[in-house]
Image (cartoon, rainbow, N blue to C red; front, side, top):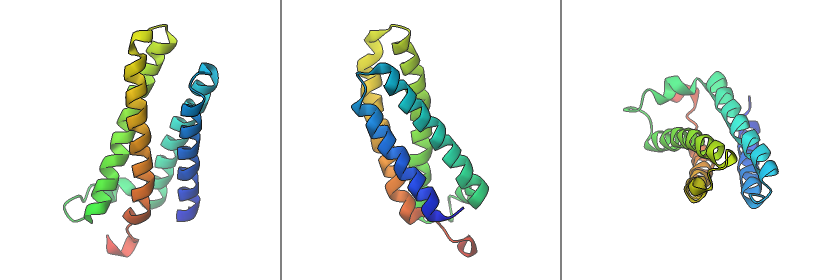
Length: 131
């Protein structure tokens, strides 16, 4: 799959994430958008793995360019933050409004990390012959 197709999908994920934050007061729409964002982003990770053998490249951290290692670290952190967002979001949906400020703060951190993942992805792609 072409680099620009993946970059386009990544940009759409970021835009949808921002849209989901904008509509946070419309809880049902917020949940639908953010669920779609997380699912699409996980599918995008699978596409990258299948198309570029990303896990194999990432496992060579000692010989990889520093920017690739930074990109992988940010991307993995984003996925871990998705898990936290799902857990806290489910608690909010179950009626625990005490966790809402925590969910919101972690949400903004997740957005920043996802934007950084997108930004570093332009520089982190290593040609096959370089690996």
